Length: 358
Image 1 (tube, rainbow, N blue to C red):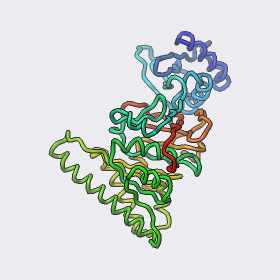
Image 2 (cartoon, one colour):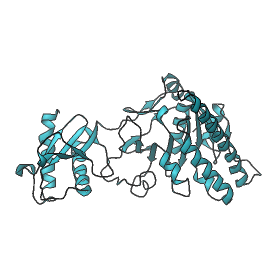
Image 3 (tube, helix red, strand yellow):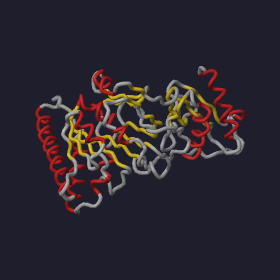
Image 4 (cartoon, rainbow, N blue to C red):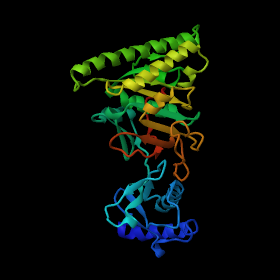
């Protein structure tokens, strides 16, 4: 379906559904028009209008158009009305509401051999879905959230395997579970709880490792001061189930843990030091707000509703987003200079790896 065919179809869908919401004003009465482009479509109101052009109208148009276009296109949900200026001298139609889309729907990667797939990748790109990849050079921090049984450990194992060839790793596993088994197979050192040891002692060891990472950042900043083009090896601090670390620990130790996380998140980007954090939720008791705000790859898997997305996507109303059915599905947002900032439906890769890890 080309744009000439798509335009009347979209107009008809909007006219039929919007008519009662905007006092019967339709494209037939020249109250609005649409324009279809490669990146999305424009809703062009003719002003003055007898209806209010606001966030509520934008979200209603999103709901109507998203259902009408699925599965040929996936509209990318905005937190608020997306106004754009139009190149015309006619004051009546000099602005539009823009609805960006991507062609088709999210498609899951099926990987027969994860190690082989990881070794075959070139450069710093990490494939997420069939039509989405992340450039690790542009990643600050990654946050993966989801309820128990949603597939967080499965997703983390994928990221660990993909990141290992391109980054040094500091792996912290408070549950002594899947990440520790992955680390054993892949000969990566892991910090985990041990018998006859207090929780505060364990977190103090974590703080030591985080402090070492912060020292690396400081040394690298000195190098960058002299040579801004210096290339560093990536270093990724991976923490599984952060909530299990920050709960039930001595206050002073917890405050030190939060302080170190914040400094790494804030200072690590230029020096190629990253955080990869996994938790059931990311409220202020789990990590500092500054750490959450510095994360530019946000993943929420499992049950998606206004409550579960409130921490990673505080301004998002997930209504109308078509979430695929199945394990390891949810939402993803990648914030960089190339990909759109919009939240997209996510299907984490299905893969096969060595026995005994998962």
